[in-house]
Length: 303
Image (cartoon, rainbow, N blue to C red; front, side):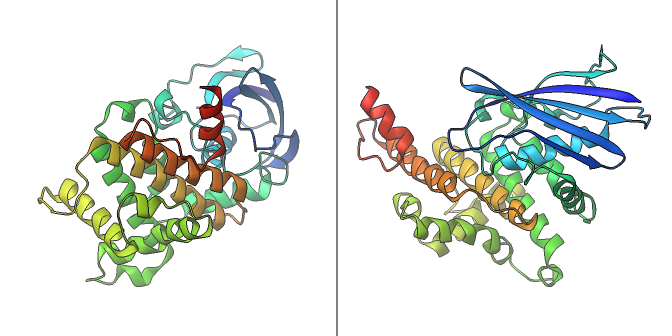
């Protein structure tokens, strides 16, 4: 029997619940437990298996793929051990090593036995593997250490192409020749429109877009940087790229989690959107103080 021990580390999220869990999956016994250190949370995973792997245990990879959707970034991998021997993780893809500048509190669901279990991991694999376009690897690599050095306009272009691949996978009617890119990504971006209205976060209004003009902007941004065709309505400022990248990355995770049958934490979504509204306004006016979010309001009190 092989005993695999892993320690992961995240920043703790104030409205996310973490509780220990245990389940059997893919001929493995999986147990996980949490401990807290300052503003961080550590996750200790033990996998018992009789299987022999040439590389890293695939169940471990599936767990952190799930955690990426739940928490918005790959965890920091403190160690990976097999029968008390430290194993180098050189064979892992670069997507498993997060860029610290993307290491944010973007948790969407609780990490408990109700969310991290055999059924969820099986569904994650169905989404990732049983598709003609492998968009999940492309999506997760965007917040890796390697992509921390990539121009942000390139990252947002690749993110939009992930949107297109996801829709192609999900609905064959979008594969009909002549269907516009704008029409293909609307299904995902409309999730943002719905939440923006529901919580009155006023992000779209603050960015000076209608729903249709926002879709046009994303389409022309993609065309400009994918096809090198100058477009009048494309994004052209670094801060606009960064804000829209984080916003759309978050919304895409909501879509994927819903496909898994998991219900995102509405309070977390509301706070994220209102924090994004505050962030946009602070970027445009450093003296802005009419905050909507709890996070920025607390910062205002402290200062």
